[in-house]
Image 1 (spheres, rainbow, N blue to C red):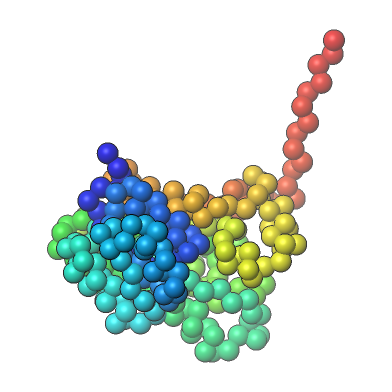
Image 2: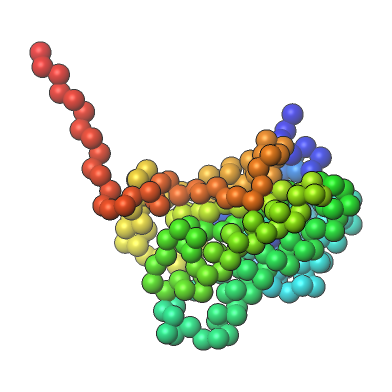
Length: 264
């Protein structure tokens, strides 16, 4: 039996990358899904790949807008009659030093990343509370809650805020049978990273990971799948770090041990 049989999920920020991997895994495991994203071309292409309207729908969604958050929940209810799982993966990450961040850019990043998390949760709460069941999973990051780098002042603040929101929502929603958790990806080799970062940057990031490589979208999707499934029924208010050990070292990474030489 598949892990998400008969479940209905709203996946925001799921046209490609980590979100696209989550969409594929959810459908593989029996869920019917509604994808919300600003990229209509990729979103509709993914719906066709996943089997069309019986399995997946698409709705153009700007999760910074309350009306769009409410609309995608309404779409799930109209199309499939229920809502069991909410995934809010949409996020933006411009690279700007704090002294150069405009108030508008600050508001834009927090609007999508943090306000969007709040709006998605609020919209999904009503049908989940009525059903006395729900799984909410939010994409945070190691950047902000665990580590940071220059140029990510607004992004890091938004992701640290998501972790705080997860704990508050988990406490408030627990009486309704709703769990609230998150994932904190490290450096994941998405289409966006390939397009927006140099190979030298990617190689440098890989060198900082104890497992020696960047993660894949599928590896993050597996953690999200666990938190969205019945297997995580007694887990709420926490996050899973998916970073290949990147946040572990206190100093430079140790060199790999050499194999022992046996004397004849």
